[in-house]
Length: 184
Ligand SMILES: [Fe+2]
Ligand SMILES: [Fe+2]
Image (cartoon, rainbow, N blue to C red; front, side, top):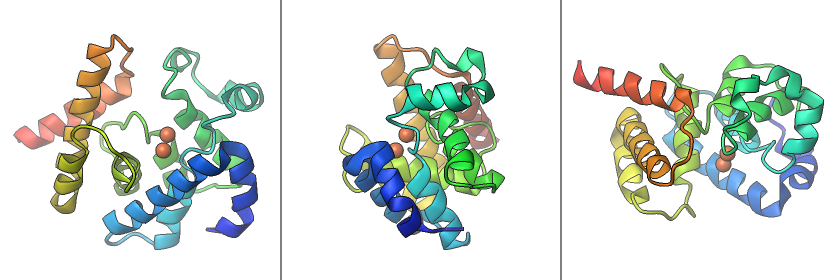
C-alpha cells in the first residue's frame, strides 16, 4: 500500500516541494504518536493528507460531484474532503480508514478513529508548526491524544470566532463529543 517513492514525483507536482516537506514532517509526527497501528498505514494517510491542497479548482472539476454542495463555502476545509477523493482516484487508496483520516484532518469529527486522531494531531504539531499554544498541544499529545485534540479544537474555534470565519459543523461535533467524554 505505502509507496512514497512511487507517489513522490506526483505529489511534489501536485502540492509543491514545500507542502511535500510539511507532509513528510506530518508523517514523522504521526509515527511518533502511533502505538499500535501498522506503520505503513499511518505513513500513507500522513503523506497524502494534503494531496488536494493546491489544485482545488482542477480537482473540484474532476471529483467535485462527490463533495457536498453545502461544504463548498468552507474554504479552508474543502481540500480535506477533496483530498479523500484524490487519494482514491489518483493514488489508488481504497482503505476507508485512510480516506477518512484525510477527509477529516481539518475539521475533526465526532468519535474519531485512532488514525483520524493521529493525522489531525500530527498535522497540528509537526516540528515546524509555530503558533501560540502549539507547545501545549505537543505536551498534551504525549499522554492523551483526546485532551490534545480538544485543546486544539478549542483554540481553533476561538480563532475562527475572533476572525469571523465560518466554523464547519463537524468541528463543533468533534468538540461537543470530546467535551461530553471529558465530563463523563
Ligand atoms: Fe490540510
Ligand atoms: Fe497539512
